[in-house]
Image (cartoon, rainbow, N blue to C red; front, side, top):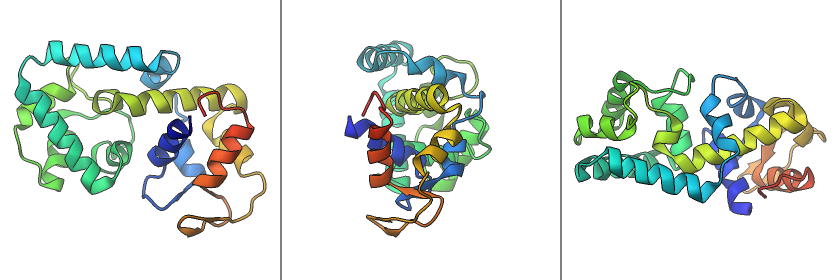
Length: 201
């Protein structure tokens, strides 16, 4: 759907500039993101419902769920998108994992101080000592997993997909002005992804 592709674009637009470049797509290329690949082939609604069921089961305390939702709201308010917040605030080293120390440091940076122990238990629901993007925003993780799988299968990598998308190498005007060479605005991204037969758009 358009919503799915728009979600991909918004997730990749790290600085909310209205365009993306090769470096934004390179972010999801590394094989360090096995959970994105694992998520790529599963059914959205079934996975989301199962994930939510597990969260409720493993976080028996309502306060943990409430704290996690308040944290998500604070991230959306400051960054506009949870993946943008993930990249710019939580996972600044880009390894696709957040430790408790990184989480608490991020909370301090945005002035979020509510029930941090409960927040960590909600994010690290499986108790493995790290939080992943899937644990913060399962829908975004699914969307990015599908996108990455498509890019790798058709173009060898996300960077390869970007080069195919930007084959005309011309700047275009988007909703926020001229993108410039080597950048894609959302209209160019959506139309070219449809042209390449993206199955979810």
